[in-house]
Length: 84
Image 1 (cartoon, helix red, strand yellow):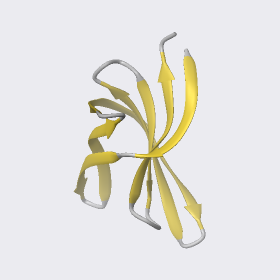
Image 2 (tube, helix red, strand yellow):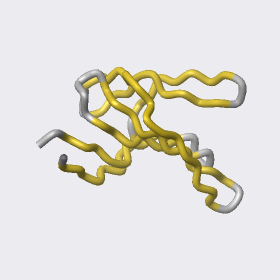
Image 3 (cartoon, rainbow, N blue to C red):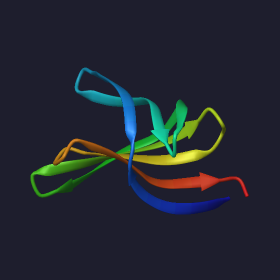
Image 4 (cartoon, rainbow, N blue to C red):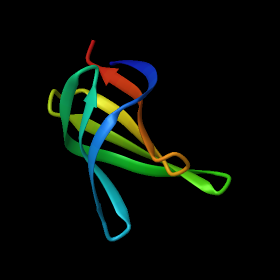
């Protein structure tokens, strides 16, 4: 499996309930991906703000790391893992 660091801003449709944020779909490079499964969630504190990380599997079976920063409320794609 090959991975690539991306760190690009993306558009995300997410669900917020009971204090938890869950990404449902995201758009990257003019393509929309549906999140099929969330493999893991972790949070890093950066001063007063938090960066939420989501390891997800998209509908095309590729793995992505999505990041949400509470400082600027921007979603980013941190890394992509491709079957190679």
